Image (cartoon, rainbow, N blue to C red; front, side):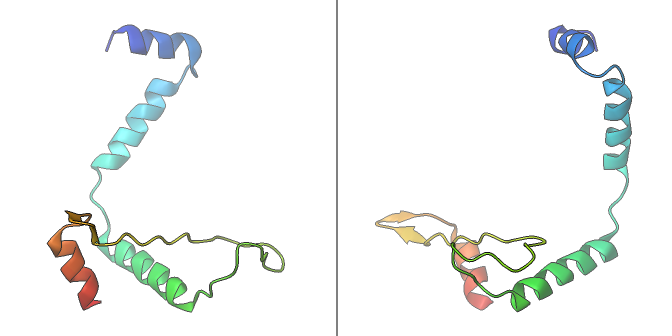
Length: 94
């Protein structure tokens, strides 16, 4: 690739940026390990179920290892649908 963007990257970025990009691209082509994805998702769900909400002013002892910000969007706002029917129905089943 020889264009303005790559010439700028060659001039201003790390000298090995092309090799790094090739390595990352080859990793993206690898098939995903669905069993580890499921394990990770189960772990996240378990942690979320055990989590206790705290106030904005509260700071946990020893600091936090991680935190989760959760937001809710109404299905409708006035006459406008904010999320699709499939999403609304799926969330009501859980």
